[in-house]
Length: 383
Ligand SMILES: Cc1cc2nc3c(=O)[nH]c(=O)nc-3n(C[C@H](O)[C@H](O)[C@H](O)COP(=O)(O)OP(=O)(O)OC[C@H]3O[C@@H](n4cnc5c(N)ncnc54)[C@H](O)[C@@H]3O)c2cc1C
Image (cartoon, rainbow, N blue to C red):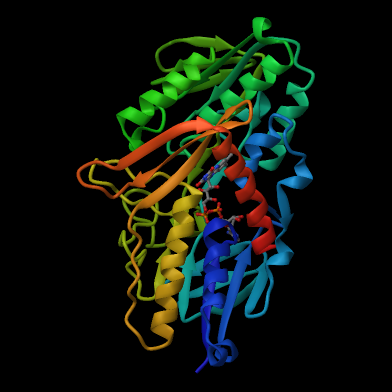
């Protein structure tokens, strides 16, 4: 009997899910199983490379590939915006057409929106246009105040604003503007990458501050007027160049369904990524997984990736009449670009009890080149 798996969103989680599903099909299953992958964007961006794009270490054309290249044998690609999702019937509407599957994998990520009209005064470095626009200004920058801003929580890739400030600092130093430039990072967080533990948070803060970057945690933005940021603690901070993270929210198409829980995100069983609907799974940034420390699992590609492998494996087991037997165990790693061709690396078990058990390795060139290698590998393998 034919089985159809609908994979919603072709970002990190969706690409891995579709790929793993097809890879695991037997010869007979290849004739009977179809994966339908839905994606609204024509340019498929490798998000970690946006950090290099914003400081001129990549050109725009180097950090994305056409989404159309994701169509493969057994993977039907549907390009368009998903307008409606009905998890009870596993039906999805795109461009007015309905698709019904036997399994649904929701990997629509976090919807990124602008708050406080920040786009009028700065650059959202979480998008291709924003990272590119930031570099256009940076390359002619003659000195002044640069601010990296986190206006709200949560945001994906907890390391990204820290990496951004370190890479900007490196650019400024290389261009002889160090004495004329002040770089600051403002965030509502109490410290960097808090879920990874006090030790790593302290190490990252020390790395940032040792490079001369001014770090201002517990600063909640309330407004932006002209080129001045206003914070809840009554501070007003002027800037000459601004890079900011967008507000992250559950995609509207899902928020309006009963899939969204009290957290505002999709809540799932943390080892299997099952939702409350049979054969409907959610993975990656769209989910909220509470940890024992009362904070959610960070939103990061590495988790979307591993969760996708688990879900694809378990769906294939079900299709072949076997019990699902793979679990997402909470392990994850990330690189932290610190400039000058160096990076740190942190990894461990985020499901560890009572606190995540994450360790950081000494920064060096090896981790930077591993990250570069992964970028090349990603494009080579999936596009
Ligand atoms: C600057 C930056 C650096 C980062 N660096 C790292 C890193 O070093 N390591 C790491 O682990 N993570 C990193 N991340 C985070 C990582 O990119 C995300 O956590 C990851 O992409 C999440 O995967 P996902 O599949 O859940 O969502 P996404 O990759 O965001 O994919 C969701 C997809 O769904 C599509 N979609 C959404 N709504 C619709 C709709 N209605 N119809 C059709 N399609 C839709 C979107 O266009 C998107 O392609 C970084 C992110 C940024 C911005």
